[in-house]
Image (cartoon, rainbow, N blue to C red; front, side):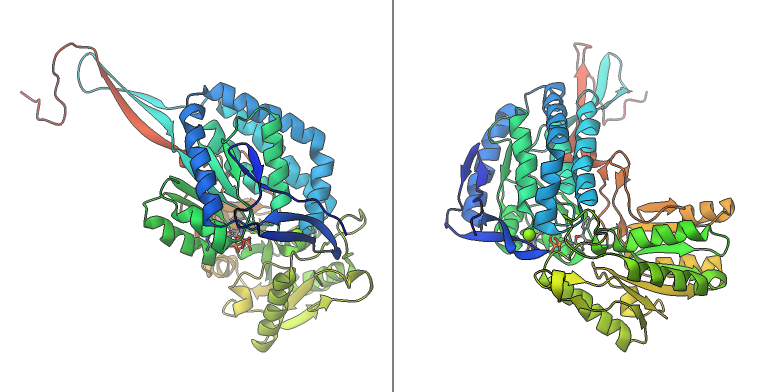
Length: 496
Ligand code: NAP
Ligand code: MG
C-alpha cells in the first residue's frame, strides 16, 4: 500500500528526523489502512526545533497582539473550510466516529475565534502608587519558547487549546504530538502557516514521548511546558522540568462520576450516562467511568442502561451509522481487558461486554465491547483507577451525602455530574464535589472552550486551559513610572 510521508516542521522547513527513522500511523479500525509515515524524532531534532523557535521569538514577540490574533482568526476560517477532510483524517488515525471528529475540529475553530478576541484584550492592571507623581501598572509578557505535549484522544482540539493562547500571547512553540495522532497536528499547523504564521513560530517534532518528549521537557531554552496526558507521565514530566525551573501546566487523568438521585429525570440520566460512558469509546479524560445510583432507581436504571449499551453499534468510525469506534491501539484494549479481570476478581459483576471483538468487520481493528460492571463498591480498583476505555462501573448508595462522599473518595478530580430536580442538592453538590467541572443534569463530557478547563488532586496542578490558558502562557511584569523628577523611596519607612 502507498501512503504519504510527513516531515517535521522546523524553522519553516519540512524535514525528516535527523536519524532518518520513521513511525507508521495506522488506522485502528483497519490495520491495512496506513494513514502515513511520520518522523521518529529524538533530541537532535528537538534541539533544532527549539533553536528555530528561539530565533523566531525575537521578532514574533514584537508583532502587535491584535495582528497575531488576526492570523488565528484566519486560521479559524480556513479550519471551517477544511473541517470535513480533517475530521476524516482524524477518524482514520485514531478511530472516533465522524460526528465526534467533526466536533474535535469544531472545537479548534471555536478556540481560534475565542482566542482571536484576546488579541485586543490581554488585559493588565493599573493601580495607584503609594507615592505622588508615580504611575504603576502590570503588563503581560510572553514566556518565550514553550514546549507543548499532547495526547491522542482530542488530536486537534487539545493542541489548539495550547497553541492558540500561546501564540496570541507572543510565544513561539515546539509541539510534540502523540505518536498515535500526528496528522491532526500537521493539519492544524499547516492551516496556521496558510493563515500567515511566520516561519519558526510553530515547530512540529513528531516522535515518542521518551525520545522527542523528554528532550523537549529537559531543553534549557524551553521556558514552559504545557502537558496533557496521563497522571503517571505528568508526574514524571513535572519532576524533570523542575530541574530547570520550568513552569509546567498539567492536565491529566480522571475517574468521573455521574450521580443519579431518585428524583432525577431517568430518561435524561440514561441518555447522559450512555453518551458520557461510551462517547469516544470511553477514551475521554472526562468520560463517565462511575455511575452512582440511588437505591430507589438503581434496578430500573441498570436494566435499561445495560440494554442500551448492548444495542450500540461498534465499528469503523467512517461509517455514519456506527456509534462507537475502536480503541486507539492494542495496548488500550489490553488495558480494558485487564480491568475487566480485576473487576471480576474483586467481586464486580460483568453485566454486558467484557471482551475484545475480533471477528468479521472487527477483525482488522482494536475493538472492545461496551462494558458495564455492576455490584461495584468504592474501594475496588475498578472504581478508583482510570481505564480509558468503554468500561463503566455502577455503584449504589442510600443518601445524597453518601453519594458525595463516594464521588470524592478517589485521587482524581476532573469532571462530575449530578442528575436531580432538587435545586438545594444541586447547589450543595456544586459546592462539595471535589472536581474542576460539575454538570447539573448533563453528562460529565462536553466542555466549552471559553470556560476554565482542568481538574484538582491528581488531575491537575492548578492551571487551566480555556479561560485561564493566557495566565499560563504569560508572565506578569510590574512597571513603575516616576514623573516627579526626584528620588522617591518606597520600601522604606516614609511615615513622619
Ligand atoms: P500519555 O501516555 O501520558 O501521553 C501524553 C503525551 O506525553 C504523549 O504525547 C506522549 O507521547 C508523551 N509522553 C510520554 N512519555 C513522555 C515522557 N517521558 N516525556 C515527555 N512526554 C512523554 O497519555 P495518552 O495515553 O496519550 O492520553 C491518555 C491520558 O491523557 C489519559 O490519562 C487521559 O485522562 C489524559 N487526558 C487528560 C486530559 C485533560 O485535559 N485533563 C485530556 C485528554 C486526555 P507518546 O504518544 O509517544 O507516548
Ligand atoms: Mg493511528
